[in-house]
Length: 74
Image 1 (cartoon, one colour):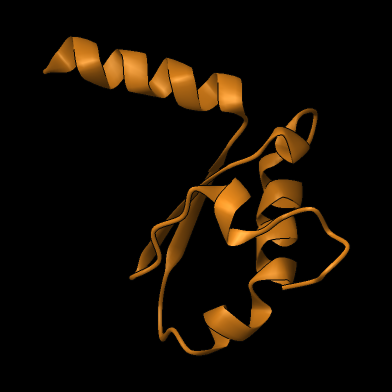
Image 2 (image 1 turned 180 degrees about the vertical axis):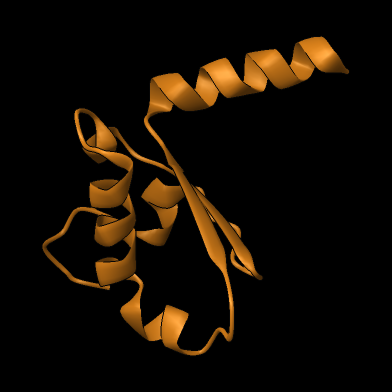
């Protein structure tokens, strides 16, 4: 990962198998495409080892709202 990006495995709350869900305050104000590009740039080496994958990116506020919705459905 890029050393000066501020994005690390710890800040992304990531699960990489064939799917990645990333949460970062750095996503605030960015489009979905910009968030995906940021993740892709910082995980370039890891992504190169995966045949096919998808990512979903969230700001911390979006992540909390999603978790509240999911909890309400359970």
